[in-house]
Image (cartoon, rainbow, N blue to C red):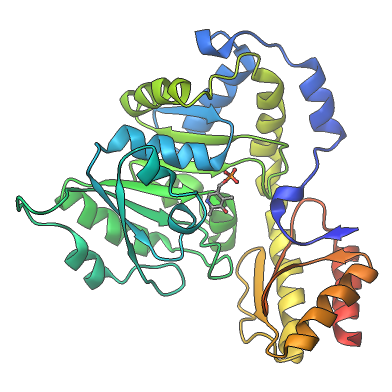
Length: 335
Ligand SMILES: *Cc1c(COP(=O)(O)O)cnc(C)c1O
């Protein structure tokens, strides 16, 4: 099967499996797992921040950032179609006691004047705006990149208002590769970032939360509170280290493959968006029957695509080759 539903379907390769089997491990709740410690040290340096913590999932990484930066009754500003607002089970409300103010953006970007207007004044009726959360790349808009200029503009506003700027960087490497920029540069003026290793980078599990030492030490306590103290976590960290070091080097291939898919879909008039800068291709099949038939046809020919009503998603990744992409393009052309 060619799996295009998500880049979370990536399966660890031989190199990762060997590294996992041979990893030196200890009890990470005691900070005594050498492989986890090594991963966290390298990750901090990689993103130009003081410290990092390895966590089971991206959802937990974002929640830890909120638990650490906010108090109950605070408010976060996030884009309306962001993962933290739409797809994290309202965890920040249910578990951190924080309200999200969701603002409709364009290609994942909250317009700067709306952002300024959304920041709360000092008033006894209002919650305190404690965090701005941006998502890079922005999943729901089709893997759109937030440019460094935009992030720095938001960072300036956050700093002026004493607000924590968190990046949901599940796919931050896709954003960096697409812009030909060092992730450090992209994150220079942000306070924290969450990065998924289990998506296009190919690790079987795990994400990183990166920030100041003080911030990460506090997040470590909340990770334990949520039941995320993972003991011999070095087996997973061994794969994560390979994902971090090797993964980014091949993301440009995913972006090229995704662009090829988008161009075929444009011929069908199912998308206008051929400026696929990263690895997520979203498209819309207006006719209901045609939409159902397309999914069935692809499945019969060994390709899984994500479908919700008439909206589709295809994601290219670690386990989708150029050969596979050619096959999918031909299938689209022949439908
Ligand atoms: C996948 C994803 C997450 C959450 O990661 P999980 O590991 O699935 O919990 C967060 N943000 C974005 C943009 C994602 O795509």
